[in-house]
Each structure stands twice: as C-alpha cells, then as structure tokens.
Image (cartoon, rainbow, N blue to C red; front, top):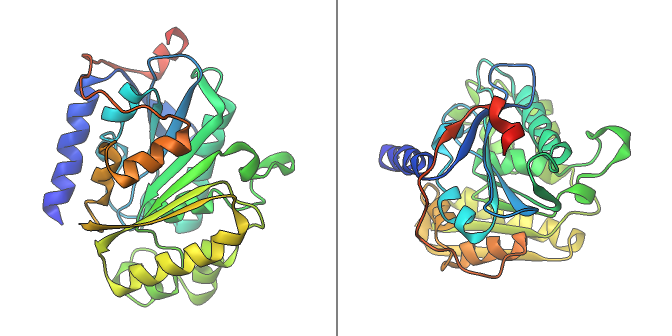
Length: 283
C-alpha cells in the first residue's frame, strides 16, 4: 500500500508544480475545512470534485491533485477537498464537512468560472462513501435536492454499507456502534432520484468490495437516468484512481462523458503556480 500512497503524493506534487492552483480555499470555519482548486483554461468549464479515501483516517487533499493533470488540459476545472480525519473528528462531522465543501463549490461556481450545471463529484474508497453521502436528500437548506445541483458522480471502490467496517479494526478510530453504522450507510438511505453515476471497482478487490459494488449498482439503477458499471480488471483498490489520469481508459472516458467533454486530453501542461485564496478575485 505504501507504494501507492507515495505515488499519490509524487504525482500530486508534480501536478501542483505544472498547473495553476488556488491552494487552501476555506469552505468552512475549521482549519481542516479547505480545498484546492485548479481552474480550467476556458470560461464556464465543468468541474470534477474529488474526495480522497484513506478509511476516513489517512491521506489529504495534498495527495489528491493528480487527476487535474489531464482534466485541466481536457477543458475541466478540478477541486480536491480536504477534511478532518478520525479519531479527532467523528464520522458524522466528516460527512458534514464534505457536504459543506460541495455546497460552497456550488454556491461559488460563478466566482470560480465553473458551469454550475456540470459539477460532478468523485471519490475513492472512503471518499466514494462521502461523495454518495453528499448525494442524499435533506441536508441542503431550502429543500434543494443534491440531484438538482450535482450533474453526476464517479464512485470508485466504495464503502456504502458500514456494518462490515464496524466489525473490523478500521472501526477503532471511528467508534461506530450498530445505530451509527446504519445511519451513516448511504446504501440504506438512497433518494428516489440520483444524478447519472459511474460506479467502478478494480478487478483485484476483496469479495466484500465486490459485493458492495454489485449491491450499490442494483440499488441505484432504478433511481438514475444512467449508470456505468465498470470493473477495471487490471486495477486494484489503490491504483484504480490512476485511470482518472488516463483519458484513453474506460474510466477516464466515462468521466469525460459525465463532464460533458468529448475531446481527449493533451499530455502537455503549462507551468503552474500555487496561489492563495486571496488571489481568487484575480482568477
């Protein structure tokens, strides 16, 4: 696993060096509530919002920049969400932080020169859980439903039923009891309407991840206009995210379609700069 974690960090650092980025934009009052935003090269671009994995207790937004390296040349903007980790933050609060980040991005779409009708969420492992939690009804003020403001979602090797997690060592920093595991399992609380989805997993996954993938696809199919059910045979739980960095792959192609982009990325990138949130008005 350490090989893949190191690759996340290395690829992300290279991406931040090559592309302009507004680093550390605050979406909430807590120090951990920041995101990194990579602007598109044209106006009113689609936006892919990435929520990192790490079993709610590892990694961060600095490890999650690498998909921007081809998405930005393809015509999209990209945002990597940071959030607090367990055990310092309970899972309820982590869910709330990601939801606040999504709402902030929706409300600031015009400021960011993003097409508010083409905002797509993406997440891997625990990040897929958090992205799907942001698609549940009832948390946006004024009765707005996530399906009304989110154009789609890309869920990679996700954890959608937390009861098995509760019974493993992963639960030690989470402290979930049976009630909390059920309440925070998005597969048990799906709305009647979801945006188009990409649900993908690696071919080299455990039986439990394969089960959760299969049961989510079955549950969401009658609730969405489109679902891409992808099993990427040559990928595993940790490297499936690298296909987000490959526009020629099945997963990369599906992401482009969800964003409304039909072209292919240029691998060439311009020199970048890291900007602070104080520069956002000069974007």
